[in-house]
Length: 70
Image (tube, rainbow, N blue to C red; front, side):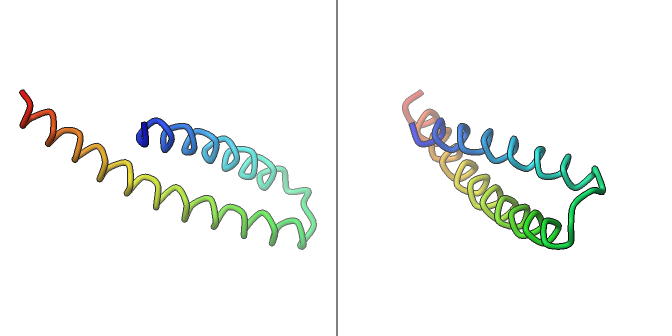
């Protein structure tokens, strides 16, 4: 269950990141918008890193339980 929740959240974050990066690539943002987008990208990157760590930990636990049961 938790792995699915993390997968879903990562999907949302990747979509948000892609949107922000596309917006940055246009070159039409004001300095304030650039700063805001940069802060949002940093927050997304931090959350992705945290969630990927949780996913890896949970995945390892599931594998260990499966190995013991099998």
